[in-house]
Length: 308
Image 1 (tube, rainbow, N blue to C red):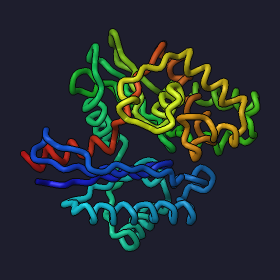
Image 2 (tube, helix red, strand yellow; image 1 turned 45 degrees about the vertical axis):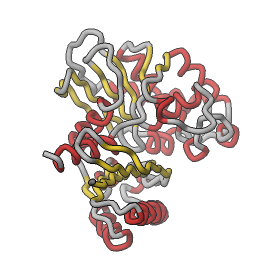
Image 3 (spheres, one colour; image 1 turned 90 degrees about the vertical axis):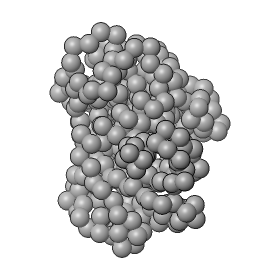
Image 4 (cartoon, rainbow, N blue to C red; image 1 turned 180 degrees about the vertical axis):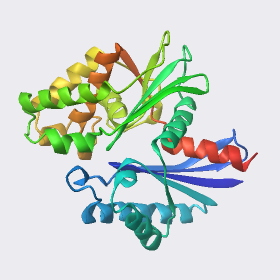
């Protein structure tokens, strides 16, 4: 019996997953947690991880390490993505996590992040056709991963994420139309950098907090349930309707919406804007939600190597 933990240190959220495995294909989840720590808060302005954000993140990571120890985990694999990757004080953060949380973390490049996220997505999504475009909207960056069977056909990482864009553009509460127009104009400009390989019947899949939150809001979930999120289909019209509701409300009002985590209320409009602009530009009428991604991809890859 082998117990493995993975920790995904994102720009907005840190996520823990612990599994118990008897083989690469035979395992069960014994713990999964996530916490919005907003590690990338203030990064767009300063280019560095800020002290309070670092403290919040290390506090969460310390709890995760303790949890893994309580569960007698054999190994912890922790990775950091956009905010840490780009931070001028990246080395200081990694050293502080090592000393304060007793955790070694690997700062992974966008390509590795994409590969692992794709592994996680393919572990739970039901395909009607193989060609897929995975849209991973994060706190600091957004990835477009086009895949056919097990091959990545195209990959683009853009430095647009919900925390960065909210801090840069959405300063009014509720969001004013002028700010929202500036936001979407900027997003469309960035999306022009995405080059997709020619493909028929390409399916759009979203595997990060924005899309899973929209799926939870559309179902009015009081208690979040990954089984109700995975393979849930959101139409562009439903997303537009939900987004229009977000834009009419202030942050305090959004916090009471069923399915929306209160700590995500300030950044959800920027995330939905990225999604809607991408769907408009690339001609998608619907997206399939997926709760599985980088955290799960780490587990699947490590189990494959451990039991090989």
